[in-house]
Image (cartoon, rainbow over all chains, first blue to last red; front, side):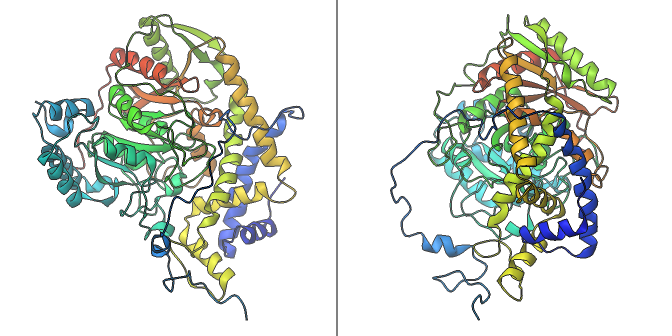
Length: 95
Length: 485
């Protein structure tokens, strides 16, 4: 299989990373060489193999749903690029 | 007493406990050497003034029962440190100051250690040479213009160059063991679930583990003992009884069965690596262990599997960097435009490439062909190890297929860069512990490492084997301090 410019533009949109034409062309080459390498997996028949989602052989632990961090609004907002002390501020979404 | 910065962690702890050295003496010595070592570019953020204050404070009322009493230590800049900038080597986090502490670093400070600063690494730990860092290349103390490996390149350089007595890195596909091998240091990747991932900037959550990087095996065991803990704040942290790794460390490995997997003899592997491996086999035999030829038949599928699983998880983890809640923001005409420009300007080329691979393999129509397929092969790889461990107690392999390479040598070809991790990646996929120890030099005099892979939660065993081998190998790092004027 091969990845073309159109596919790169599509992935770029899905991943919310803007890519100019020059970079997109470089990405076509890079991703094709990486996927050539990945295609090796097709040598293996895996129809009857279970997927491995986690190496930890335990079921995830449950815990009581308790509030442990109180009054941390200031901490949460502290690193925001733009805020009005109560909210994160983003470019206008609704016209 | 030898020069402070030449002492191992174990010696420093001993000297503090016997009141031969103060925390201030030690902290000053490492700061002075770090100041003279700017050319290595090992640090992203220095915290020297505050480190000295903490050392003085420690000395006023020293608690000598702690495991790391007043010991200064720099850590990889992937661990969130409260009030200290944490960048993950990325422009997108260049202004991020965590309001909380990672569990692993918290464990270290609780045992009396003092933060010296934050060490350089590949951006979001994605790289094998430290060349993807927004903060520039790191130099390998073994020779000018050679990479220290990656992604924990700053950490490896700082330990080998004696800017810090010991450090912690993280390992998703080899990021502790490969740089340890490239710099003649010891690096342990613990079993998945041994060290908490809480507060570590996430790369690939099912693979990431923190671990110690040290000058010798004993130091490594001591730090592992400190950082490994059960943590309810990490849902995959595992509650098991942890050893006192340094106390229980022994060089008695008589009768241990050590597997030698034939699939690690890869095409085009330099003769020096094969010879090193053979020497390693002789060393473990000399220690009274038995070696057994084994097969891990799916080894050659590990790297392609990794390059689906890791980018898939990364693309999901890194979706949080959107310029809204923290980090860098580029201005855009509207919300979507702001997102796209922020991520385009904030992430470097390798990170963007991996996000795109991950997005693609998870996208509609490709999920089964790539991601599901990789998860199935991952199971086959884990099964290989499960089968092998019915016959052996540990596995011995080379750590890397080559010694350190030149800065810039592999940056244009991602696949050749990825091949660096060919021997380390299977261990992450199977969630096992692995340790790299320096075992010899190549013809240029650069260090080469051997890797010992253990059963899950069997860190003590691989530390013991490493400890026994270390005494036979008697490795001396050839570092001439070329960067110190």
